[in-house]
Length: 481
Image 1 (cartoon, one colour):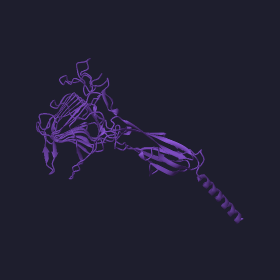
Image 2 (tube, rainbow, N blue to C red):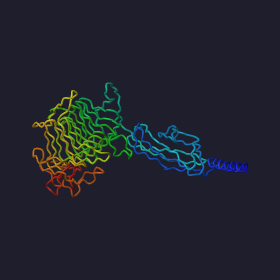
Image 3 (tube, rainbow, N blue to C red):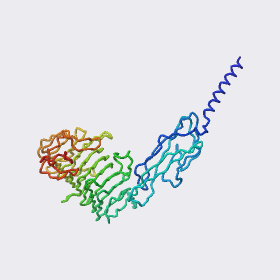
Image 4 (cartoon, rainbow, N blue to C red):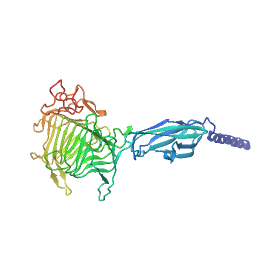
């Protein structure tokens, strides 16, 4: 009996083993086709010499037996501008790739566009071919390539100075094709970089447009044809991501900088204007512009002189406007808004400061000559959006005023020296802060509450201010229509 039971047990084990072996056998007839999670991989605009982000799709085996793919290859072979990696193995062509039964493999695809010398975008097509059991299947690859004016470092100093290039300012930057900046691109002393309407400037990770002392930046955008500054990635996933590039840096003693009709977005600091000391004219005049989605600050002044009109400064990880180490600042008809949703924000949208601590630990006072906000909106999602940081309250050392403004604050706004016609903690009635739309709804308190003594003839939509139906301007960058 024991021998019979042993024989029966061995027979059953062999049956399971044989069954298992049969199941693992590859399907070899023409019914063994592949499935794919997509039949076409699409890339948004990719700049020349800059690799794309990675797109992923799956090769799927829906059969109860394994499949062996005899060949996977790019249709254009070694000349392809696309690159692929199949389940960890890279190459233009791969052979004998197995997929277990009811399983899948991941395919990772990237593309790098070669310079074409053509200003207009170029459509790039290819496909990945799969040969399995005599079946030929494919997944299409499509990308749009764009040639650029490339600015990349050709100076590599030591002692902590970053790699940089010197911008040729002989001719203005025009809008025939984008400008792409790597590292620090420098406007040198004595030179003026002019950007004409519609110019597109893209900055790679940590890249900086640096206007050196004695240099000048002039941005001449137009309504509907603004000059844009943003990151180097144009894929949809990067459309509203902050921190993709460094900053526009107006260094100490840069002069007569003008930014008009610009959109500056998705960097670390939008515009930084550094210490200039006493000056009769602004270091920066910024008007009709939007600076948004910055991981640190939209506008950052250090003892500087900044004049702003008809601007939106919005949606930053720290301050929207950090006006530090004293200086002189004047903003009319501007909207300062911070409804940051990327993580918890702890700093107010506006910070005013009149000192710094030197390397010896000694507090150095730098007079805040004036910080004036006229017909402005300053609102966000914190209880306190105004940060006053003064080392001294000596008369004239820390001067600021909010004149006909909506202000989100817990401060006492009775003092006429600093506040005039302030609407405290009122909802400004923005249309949709989740998409950075700071135009006004019909219920907004900002409507018709401006001071007629502050005359800015058009708004950020280039509409007449005030609205012809009334004699009073609205607060902020937009008139209600």
